[in-house]
Length: 361
Image (cartoon, rainbow, N blue to C red; front, side, top):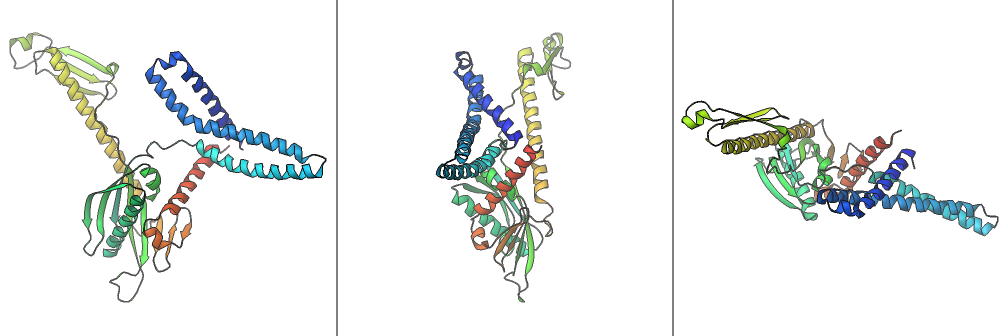
């Protein structure tokens, strides 16, 4: 095991013990918010700490086996050598598993997704292929017990879709399908091709995590500067002679709202706060939508045939993922929604790259 990984595991195990002591402290149990946060941290650290304890136990067993392998008795020595080899192989597998446990989880992984498929170059054949891809993902989703809802569709003239946008509702949907975004290329003989020539077409796929709903905006009173002033304009003698108008400045964003419609300072304050919340809500929604639009732009590319993450070759019955150089001669099964082998290979490669980056000395 690399020294950097061992150090992180030791720190994680120490923190796990510390959190356990804090949770057992009656003073901590009295504060519900702190107790809840510590409980969540404890649950997150527990599998890592337990795995590291098991790893250290195996190391101790291997040291004992190595001592046995140095025994003067040939039978005991052979037994020790065999046990040491077994434990060495077991430790190697646990080494990788522990490293993967250290990787931070994507907070979006458990979210539902929006699946967008659009025909690219290739005319009618691209639209037909978009329909094939949609059916492939739908069958995969149904196999996992997910719910599929079509949000919008633009059918192709000869079948399939020029565009289809759906919502997939299921646990871990984004974690499983997030690497499907990009250009998908198909090579096959279209039904309308009289001379039997192979055509190449393309579709773009975008997988977007569903945004958190923003029902309300929490405003920290310390972030507000509230000024009162005398209202101006029409409204009667009372409005003009008392400091009933309210101006609220939201310091983090610089947003300013004013209200002087009511004679009551309390009512003006309430209305101004409501308006500020509405504006902050609109700004937050716009920011999320902008981020999602940028994510979509980065994912789908131009839809050109030369930009592709995967090729589906029907004459040869193969599917090739160009990012990990994986070719499967199981095209019929893949198109029928059996995507597990592809998706697991992509996730394994991604985790391996993350682990290599994290543990680089």
